[in-house]
Image (cartoon, rainbow, N blue to C red; front, top):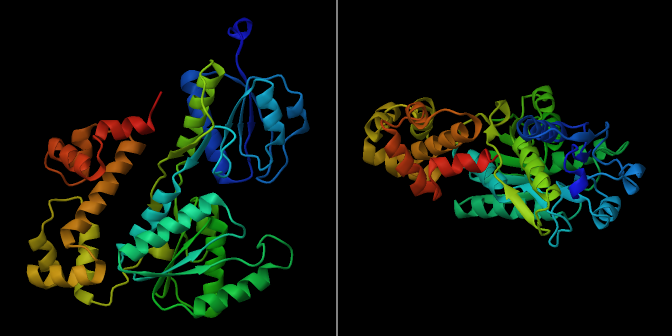
Length: 391
């Protein structure tokens, strides 16, 4: 923005789809930023994910653009005219603009951990057609996490575009065949919620019980899609509101003259929202299953190994041996993993003070919780929270 325009409100075009929850959550995050630091004059209209850039963008005399367009041609021209451009579109090895994107490695690791904590040893990964960088990173991280914990993973790659006319049935036939050939019980990660719904439909057609034989977790946490499916679909929340907030903050700095090189900037996603499609303990050892159930119900209390062993009906030594055999972890490692995820959630999603968070997560003192958190993450709770609430 030049000096004579500093007093007027910045003019910003938001080329973000309004047709999907992911895009609307991004827009809510931008709105949250403007409430704190705005206002802007915002140019926006209803659009689908695959809609082309609006033609007026080629001649638009604005100040900045936040885009999720597939076609960057008009944005390239805008950048050459001096407009600041921030991308939220698919990753590229050589990005043309500063690009913010959820960390695909963490998405995959969190879904894999969700399954592993339930005792699964067989896994499936449903990808998308094409060869997108974001999916390659996600798939590699999921496979690595599964294999490092002693699991095996089969991959399904769609042959047909499931949203194209008359191809749904062909795709379902292929998916049913793939599902029937997998060892059971199996835990499946899908690329997005509509694909998760597709997998659940294929299970229904094949007569495969969910989640008893096939557990499913998708990505995006579109509540409408997740709760329309039968059973309700578990899904990871990508934290799109925070993505929108950070994109607006970055664009604001760029419009004020800060130079930002084209680069990929990865943000921490949210957690798995558990619904019926993955709400199961997939271990054959009934005593270990009792222990896992007890841990889930009591992880945020003053829980110890002796109490877990009593709930499982085993000695501490026997439980630890059988628990490690079934899950790859000790009972207390499972407790600590649940507590750590809960602390992260409360730090990122609430303004609770540390003593309150400690109490809600099973720590007697917040100082001990802080040491525990830094040991496992390399960050203090304050640093972690500030990474989500930069102003």
